Amino acid sequence: MSTWPAADEKPSLLRLLRKAVRAPFTRRAWAEAAYCLIGFPLGVGGGVVVVVVLALGAGLTLSLVLAVVGGLLLIAAPRLARALGGVHRGLAAGLLGERTAAPPPFRRGEGLVGRLDARLRDGTGWRAAGYVLAKLPVGALGAYAVLWWITGLVNLTAPLRWAVFGQQAQAGDAKGMPVLTPVPFGGLAADTFAGTWLAVLTGATTLLCAPWVTRVVVAGDRRLIRALLGPGRLADRVRDLEETRALAVDDSVALLRRIERDLHDGAQVRLVAVAMGLDMVKERLDDGRPLGVAGVRRLVDGAHRNATEALTELRDLARGIHPPVLDDGLPDALATLTARSTVPVELSADVPVRPTPAIETIAYFCAAELLTNVIKHSGASRAVLGVTQGEGLLRLQVTDDGEGGAAPDADTGLSGLAQRVRTVDGRIDVRSPRGGPTTVTVELPLHA
Image (cartoon, rainbow, N blue to C red; front, side, top):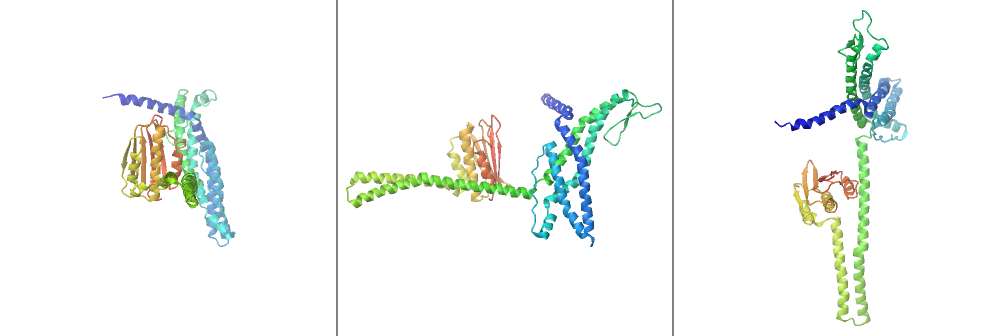
């Protein structure tokens, strides 16, 4: 049997052991422990206050006399939870680096009834209240995680406490000096000085485990913060729609400006030259001056040439707005595109359900831009273009054997593609390590 796998496992096992030994001495471990330590009184205190306010509010609303007071307490609960949520969010940002976007500000209603109704319907406030209530058990778990650190550090001082501070067992004391453990069972005791080193070993083991206990608690707290103290799915969706709408507007404005510039600098100039040439012929004919066959031919040839060039430019401009090859479907259009590529491209297309024209157009231009990047920047000798459908998505993937190193923020057109794809809720994934290969995947919905 080959021993190569075992040899390959040794370095990884050593790395794991080194990581485990170094874990208690890392800045992250101490920051997470500090977060659990500070978060315990803050979470318990805030949670108790919110629970009391909610309980009093719910109870008093059942009373005919104090129903108004109960309603005011219910209104105050989400407002208080918002403030506590902000404190927890700031604490997580300062110690954990968990920078969660603040939720949208509260929007007041019109009139007294509208304001009260808006307070009761404050979804962000009630989600923050949910976090504050969930922080009660999570904070208790955080305190238990800190207990691992405390017991580990205390046990490390057992020989010092025995020899210097006289904490050894007294005559007739059968129990000896207790060895602390964070688990509620298996209590130990040291009745000799040599036994104190068992406490040191227990403390060292506890300290090695302590960072991972706190990390588990903090990981759960992070998820709660992201889910309950952030903007929320609806607010995220609204913000994303606002951004994509702005991108779509900017893209359409840029397209209109490009069309105007191309018409002004290209076809319009050609057509003006045609008109001027025909005007010269007309003036000569009206004045009765002889032109001769050569003169007429020269003017007509110039007008014909300008008219032909104007038609070519208009045709190219129309192709940039909507390629005519898309009339026969995306696979045929991509086949035409790859046939014109100077780099050999292998095409595979499986599109059983035709997407909407807008999606086809975006997919076509994405493929054209990606193949252009392959030709200009990658140094590749071949590329593969694949288009598939599945799970309600159109997936377009371009892979090349070039040098790699492409990035969405680089000046290679990928950032523009990402913006164009986002306007229809699509996404783009770029994987391009140094040395290649490069794989760019574009996912688009079937309907815009």
